[in-house]
Length: 549
Image 1: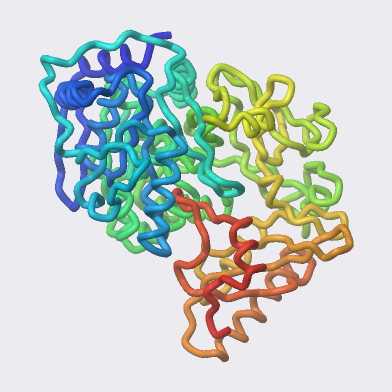
Image 2: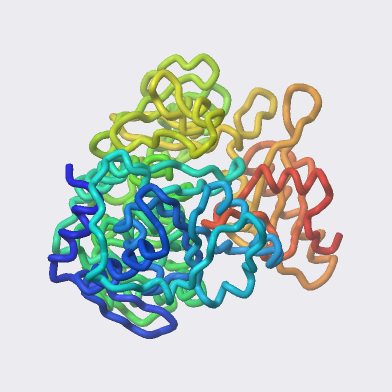
């Protein structure tokens, strides 16, 4: 297995380009040219004292400078930390505090920062030196080649913080390369593929899956900025059609927006797409069906839908289905799942039927098993427990967090915190262990409630959080918090009643509290995942921004 540096050098010999789409402009750059610019930037880093194993953080929006700097950090032999640009900021102060905490937690030696953000991050004592991204460059001829080291720490990837405080996942050279190889093999990627991405580069799916794979293989890449997608989701589909994209990816909510856009758009040619990866958050079969229906007149092949499983602790890729096999569901008895933690197959028409996406088999180099969360004993097929993983692309742990690292592993297997089961060797995810609501001996999955409540008129789909609160009797009550857009207090009462009815219909239980909050105020991670534990904390403290309180 070749090193990361060797892969970057090899990719520079390939004839393919990266096409950068920022602010509506197209910039086509051969990988060879970008590599030379990265060598010049690496020389600039070396001139500023950066040595192998130093830590360099980058803060900035998607741009040519950002992509170049990412490769430059690796060429200098340094560890890369791409700092998040939060999707939602309560205030500039909160953003700066989060940025500073990550920088210091990662022992950052140098911060490369976009000039637009520099005024907001004024250095204080204890901060690392800061250099503008557009002023990093040096002389490529003076670049000093760095020796390969499979044990070199190449990425510190902060977790999303969806269920706990963000932690720095350590990804070493050998770990990253193993996962890159696994992604290429399981995804059957070739030189004929064209990757299209708008995903943020501070997120593992965007950084590793959609940037580092083409950057190290010399595969064509079309890269846009997240804000260009969110401003007009239909652009994503237009990029795929225009550039004959074959591989793309996004979380479930983005495919919902894409389906809505496709229903309104003039016909496109999406026939080249063979992998439309749906990951990073739970895959909703109904949403996938809506995407397939919307994409039919645009030539989108139903089989291109690619529900997958991944996490930062693996680099990114964990389990992939067979390409072009499309979404396949396992239909189980929801009540049995909740009460007995067993995935009992039932007919689709059964009143308690619950469809769950089959996420394929472990990518090459990984093994998966399901264990009882309490005893740690291995479970059989269709028995629900905690997913554990071991193999060549598993992280060695969390940076300077020996306590969290010890907790992460069990008998040499990495604990994921995901409730799951295996069927025919394929992975099915049920939810996060920490998020499960326990009511009367039942394990109620908040995603089911959130999905149903999101269908209530006036509720913003994808912006609902359900969590449990202690009832004092060894059980929990259900609380639902939903973002809404309302005109008057009467509407609020009607929406609350509708949400309560939807909770009873979905879970067979009543909600203790239904809270309506202003649009854009639910706590989310930098990658857009809802933060249930933080929402619960704010609810208990009375800190939610209520609508018609």
